[in-house]
Length: 376
Image 1 (spheres, rainbow, N blue to C red):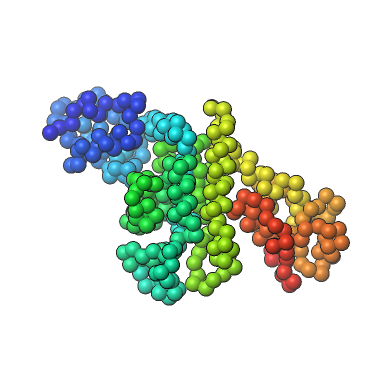
Image 2 (cartoon, rainbow, N blue to C red):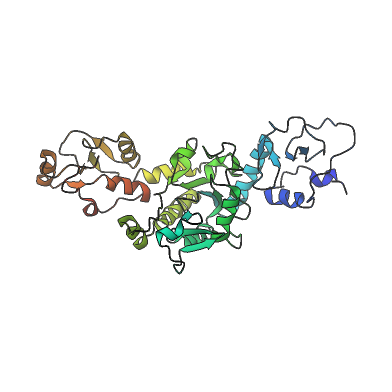
């Protein structure tokens, strides 16, 4: 039976769920019309080269719109339809007091090991944070399942990986076996227009002003850094490191959940029309080291200077009475001795790095410089 044109009409209220429901009525694809070519401009949706509206094959299927095969295989949306669905999707989520959250997989939520590698690391299958599936062994980041449950109350969530589609779906079975958190919102490199090089919010059907990203790799989000909350990479080595001990005692995802709750609350306190998570995230971040005047002459990494400034700190390379912290000064040096005499905070550069991951000022006594290294 052919597709009735009225069934496929473009309705202002038709969102992604309704669109997918309609498409699922035709498991063998849209039947191509045998009538003479129409004057249809193919305004919204194309499935495997067939216009969703007029059921004619289109000539420019390779350059038409953007592909959303993660939602429905062969689905392409025109740019105007993407804009409409983003607006409608965000409007629906906002009415439910929800924003959008894009989650990277590896290094952010877990560390996975292909068949054969896990045995070398001594992973215990009795550990609640160790899962096995299809020969792979997956080490979950502490608190990840609780994080997903609580975050889902505030966000519509996406998984986004530069791994393969089969890998992404395998991981989703571990993180979301019932499909309640992500449903079909699982994006892989097979869906990504930039392959394995970059990620894009173009594939997220929500307004960018309502989207936050959690990822341990900022380079793949070069065009969307304002949406990014940078995660400390989660790496399991098999030998317990100080980072692993710290994270076990104070799960990073627990701290990030608090941060997300803060931004979410601030967002819905703003007036409609003025709300943007990017501005709010920047504001929250800029308060982390506010009031800290950091002497960073010994820090040669210019990126760390930028990080400190983004966290609200003031950086300098000259000692004066306004300095509050001396960063990575070697013990016994003139600078170090001055700091001791003036009762200033003397800290390792990790104090800034960790503050950047946790978005909070950390106890300076936990980051005193070592005896022999200024750790540039």
